[in-house]
Amino acid sequence: MNKKVVRIIAITIAALLILGLLGPLAYTFVFAVPTESNSISEQKKITLEDMSRIEQELNTAEEKVRELNEKVFQSAEALEEIDEKMYAAQELEKKYNEESGKRFRVMCEKGMMSYLDIIFSAEGLTDFIDRIVIAKELAEYDRDIMNAIKSVNDEIAGQKIDTEKLLSEQQNAMAEIESAKAELENKKAELKTALAQLEADEKAYIQYVEDKNRAESELRNQYSSSGAVSVNDVADGMFVWPVSSHNITSEFSPNRVNPVSGKVLPHTGTDIGANNGDPIVAAAGGTVSFAGVNSGYGNCVIINHGDGISTLYAHMSSISVREGDSVVQGDMIGRVGSTGNSTGPHLHFETMLGGTAVDPMQFFN
Image (cartoon, rainbow, N blue to C red):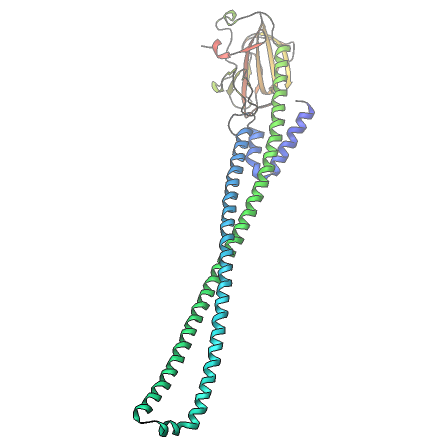
């Protein structure tokens, strides 16, 4: 990998580690490139789903705000009407109190001055009783009117208290919803930032994969044995298993699709899980055509077996041979590691016929 790409990847990793929300993605990018699960594409999908969910929640909140606005407006109008009714009732009570007071004063004055007149001027007992009844009925009428006015005032005052309480509750609910909306807007902004970062990471990752594949392809083309050869030209038993472990973690796959770029990203060999430092041996005798470092393969060895047949050993922790060395089948050429584009200690083993990678498993019983 050239320095520019290394710098892009380093900046990308640092940015992802800084963003707490993208911690899991950073782990994926550093330790699981380019696994199909936990990929940048899946992170983008999750982020977009989160944004869609937040948009729905914002729409719901907006609808609630609209509904509460209407209720607040109605409550405020109801409160104004109640205030008007209360004012009218108070004015009526005040007016009636004034009129009743005047009448009471007149009656008292007249009564106190003509009490004997009422007795002596009455035209008989019946007339006297009638006058007493009228005075009593008038007093009861005044009392009933005052009680009715008081009842109306009390009812209106109760309505006002209830409406003010309802209005306060609606305003508090409005404030809570507005606060929730603000939080959702902040989350939405964070997700937009995260999505922009993911898209930038995606571009950097795609460039990284393309550069790695190009470097690996160039290495195979440059150092593998050339010539017209087919699978049938490989003798039975030509190869021995290159490590003690037989734990195959990833098979040869010429049509595997990269989950981020959507492009075909062949897996050109067989991955064999092994312990770090386990010996790696030459699958067959030949001449070491390459022993060095490659951006994708890490520490890598290519052995030319002649007749257009080559084998490649990648991600080694150390290399025990040099270019031009002759080796025989079973010679140790290095040790298992996890250098280059690797998720853990393993050997990436390739068989190439005329420079084209083919499935190594077809050459073993």
